[in-house]
Image (cartoon, rainbow, N blue to C red):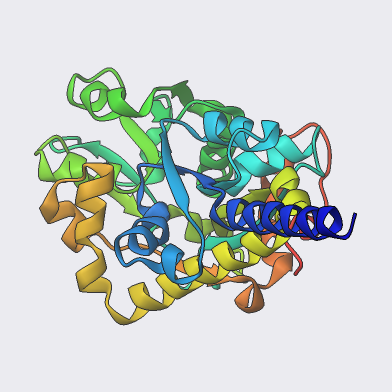
Length: 317
């Protein structure tokens, strides 16, 4: 009996050890969009920052913010790195407890903004936002994209005097070049790409400054799924640390980090190396009222059905 007890103890020990090893090596599924704001994910992967934190990751590219947030809410991925905050807020209307944001991308003041631009054809006679009266203006698909464009243009003219048309991102610049729209309101690098292709010129850079949101705009966010936080909280902490270290690397070595945009997003090298972009904001650097003020602007434009307390959507260790 004594020998049997010893054997059972050894078996239990080995099984426990195997389970611990398996848990430590369980893959973290990270979804990302092929856009600028996902750069910390690319840096962490290329610089081995995930491995240094003792986590194994698998990267899954997505083609739209809606698809990546749907996957996060459903638990098909453990983290979204990253997508528009406006999309997370839309999801929060029906599923407020299914995710937590842990890293932001945007501005902390409105002295400068590099996220959006208004672009017209290279030979367009238009010279200001007021000239968009009666013109077709392209935006990305979705209520929040249209609402943001309306909020900006409202500062100059009544947006009801503008014809907004939703266009899928790959067709935005061709639509402008073909004269199907008179201008587009879209996130960078679409403006810079249109200019580099000789298809357009800036009607206005940094139009979001017109919103006068003094605390800035957290335009995008990295987020954990609630399921991941519940089942593997330690891995979540390590993932956050790895991505924050990637942010530190970008801040100190921006020139060396930019080529990863070419590899992961397919941006032309001249655009990737010269495009001005906003900053990544850690939670301890974030003024959480900034997100609420931004949400309130879009809510007034009819982008959301319900008021959301965005300050409750952030991760807490």
